[in-house]
Amino acid sequence: MALKCGIVGLPNVGKSTLFNCLSSAKAQSANFPFCTIEPNMGVITVPDERLVKLTEIDKPKRVVPTTVEILDIAGLVKGASKGEGLGNQFLGNIRETDAIIHVLRCFENENITHVDGSINPVRDKEIIDTELQLKDLETIENRIDKLEKQARHGNDQKAKKMLEIALRYKQVLEQGKSARTLQLQEEEARLARDFYLLTNKPVMYACNVDEASAKTGNKFVEAVKEAVKDENAELIVIAAATESDIAELEDYDEKQLFLEELGLTEPGVNKLIHSAYRLLKLNTFFTTGADESRAWTFKEGTKAPQAAGIIHTDFEKGFIRAEVIKYDNYVRLGSEHACREAGKIAVEGRDYVVKDGDIMHFRFNV
Image (cartoon, rainbow, N blue to C red; front, side, top):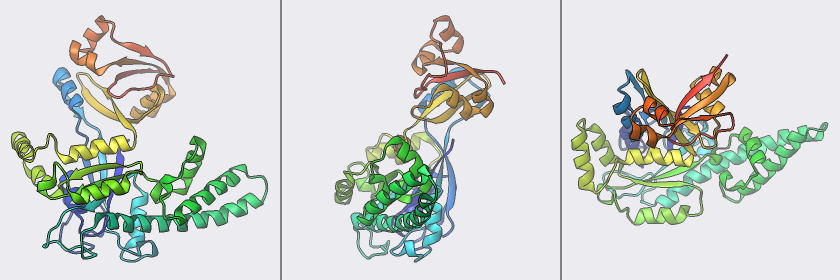
């Protein structure tokens, strides 16, 4: 399952620069609004030292890491919800994503113009929030009209329940709050997915800073932290222009030296991807052997048959059992055979909840 994240923000906050250092694809990056018109799609590898270690042990013919799809969406402006700028198109692009990476400009640079003439990331955040909320309000009002008709005719219990949820969403959105702030029961949340609300998507705030602020942040970052403290959101600090320079380096040691000079232990790109996984409650299990070492992404709480289905639907249909080795045991003992000899392979059934880092082998019959 490839995670798809959409990069959003006002024009000229560093979205395309961030995209360029995230992806091997190169988005145009220029100092004027609407530089990005068609969304750029990039596919990036999820960094995982565990897969590297498994590869060293098994020396497989093929290595397949998990990936994240990054969608670089053109800058929104005030009035986007009503079609200003290229608003409707951009809002449609956002709807396709699993999570939103909201880039906020937290640096000063006289050579890079700001669409509103001054640096204020909290104001910028509120502009984007408002446009997405207004679009969601329009969506909910349209659904309420249809649901009221369905609820009036016959005994459509699902329509009645969805109407109740829609009315609660309407109240929240009219208060200038995002849909994700509404607390729902599990069954309600499942029904609410059918509304496809933009502000229900998990959000990560990427504070784009200058090189000097890459490690410690600055006053703009602190203002953003205060503004989002009550949101269930991730926040990272990243110097996109500097990260772009690091990404251009081909030599690993050169990259590490560059990071050390900045006082960083890993690229901001890695932090962003790991943050996205936390935000969406995603984990990784592995399959490994002489032919292939591979990482697979799954949602927290996934049981063994559904994990098998991520590899192939037939694995889930004909699931018999799963053989599970803990990553630490595999690395310590050095092979599947050694783990079997040491009794470190657990045989699990349908109710087993897969853990992050599990090395899995599925038995099935179709």
